Length: 158
Image 1: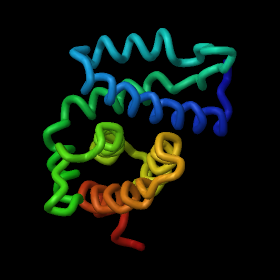
Image 2: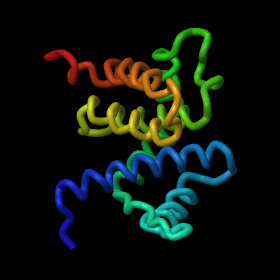
Image 3: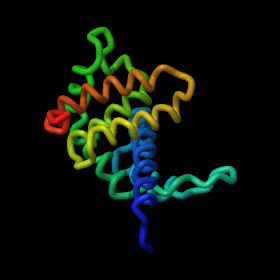
Image 4: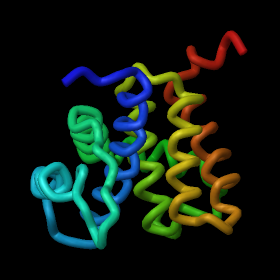
């Protein structure tokens, strides 16, 4: 099966959403990254729940984000802390937003995706979880700060 560029983008977007959900699930349970990756790829990607089909995610992108987020969690959390105001260390942040920062941080850390694309994608993920909240502006600002720290070369020309 050949995947079009547009379909590939949709699959990467779905993989990002699944990565946030999986990182959240790992924090709330005692599951390992390998257990969660298998569960998501086998039971969530393209699954049908209550008549609604879940999006098909990009398994390699999902696995990469998960592995980097877990293997570099301390460094990503420190980068996130530097982007947050002093009164709000990452431990005080909503666990869903913590998962967003870790997933996006993983992409800043180890990915060729332009930082602005990563920021936009994860702001959309946040909008899915907090449709009425101010979280999208907050996340946009934090991710922008993180991206400028992690990938300053991507911002030097702009």
